[in-house]
Length: 143
Image 1: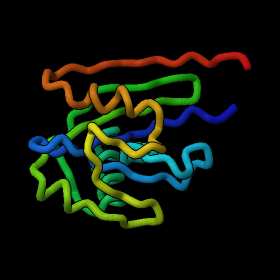
Image 2 (image 1 turned 90 degrees about the vertical axis):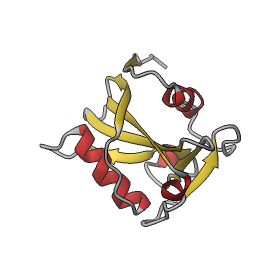
Image 3 (image 1 turned 120 degrees about the horizontal axis):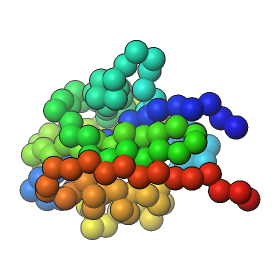
Image 4 (image 1 turned 180 degrees about the vertical axis):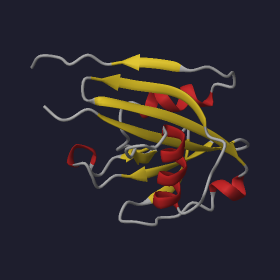
């Protein structure tokens, strides 16, 4: 059993063209090669919002503030706080690969084939225009 860990993940979305910045994961191993939201671990004594600002800067090369927390996915392994931010195309297309994981911009209507499965419902949830917060809980299943 792994330790309980909290994470953040964010969708930077072009408010005009409905494009989204994603990252192609190298780690952890079970995500390697898949495209996912940009984010990472929440450090001790760090807020989820603070972690989102820090992680996005570290992984995509730009400082983005005023993130909107729209969903949390939780299980016995930990939890992920999901954030969204709508920006103009010039900001969206300024994201870049900073570390070893590639960052790119994709049409929300034409996501890459190797995408983390939950993005197919998280991105539409992020695109919803009304302010709300959804909590999704996963239970551990016996195998």
